[in-house]
Length: 106
Ligand code: FES
Figure 1 (cartoon, rainbow, N blue to C red):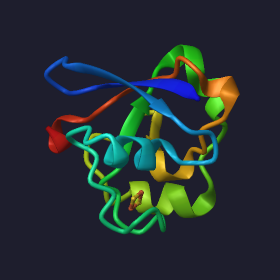
Figure 2 (figure 1 turned 30 degrees about the vertical axis):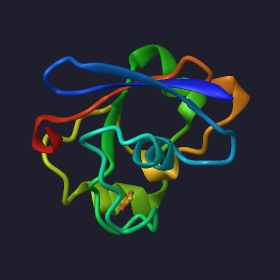
Figure 3 (figure 1 turned 180 degrees about the horizontal axis):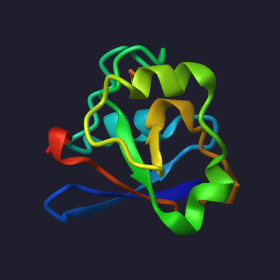
Figure 4 (figure 1 turned 180 degrees about the vertical axis):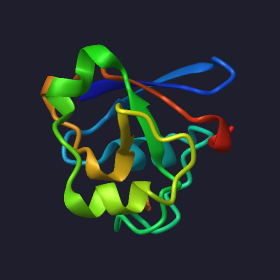
């Protein structure tokens, strides 16, 4: 299991255990973390799973794919550390990962 912390726009922190193999989006949806809807089920087609990856974790979470980049064009307040959380697979290496949610998902 990997502990993933989701921080809402208002600052509420929710830490949950997520099974490796699931995505960061699925970890949120399965644990009822508010602010990540995952409307498209993880197909990189809705951008309702937008998160900001904590700077300390950017290298470990990898780069955006071209498809993810295109979908992020439809999201609000995109920053350099923006990712679609359905495109980040949880691994043991990501134990302790912190992501923040944008205002549009508050
Ligand atoms: S769940 Fe739809 S883009 Fe991530």
